[in-house]
Image (cartoon, rainbow, N blue to C red; front, side, top):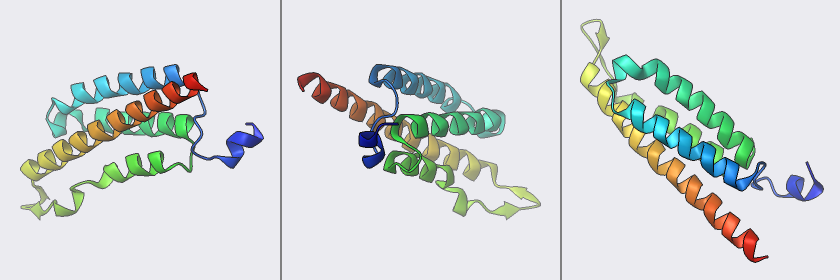
Amino acid sequence: MSAEQAANPTEIRSDGKEAIALLKKQLVALEEIAEGFFGEVQDKEREWTFLSEALVSKIFGPDSPQLEKLVKTRSLGTADVQVRFGGPEHERLQQNFEERSRKRRTVIKEFIEELKIRAHLEEKE
């Protein structure tokens, strides 16, 4: 890591075009997962989460606000899940899953646009 990158923790840590391509791939994977029912895709969602967080950490840095923003999507809606008759309320779990998926979609799209803007600005320099 260069001294310049160390001084700027939000500096992109990988090739911009590669980073955009990887995030677009994650966005497509998220779309596929989001079409399912939570009970059927929860393992895929968990895998998607770990991989996406690792990618964002590599692209923007482990202490970046971008990673923090993505990590915050993990707990969307989970506080409202209630246990009834010995098990979770499946409808609410599904709603929480859909809410997380929508927010994650928005966050990943924001990251892609941010990378495009940075790439455009670097071309002008």
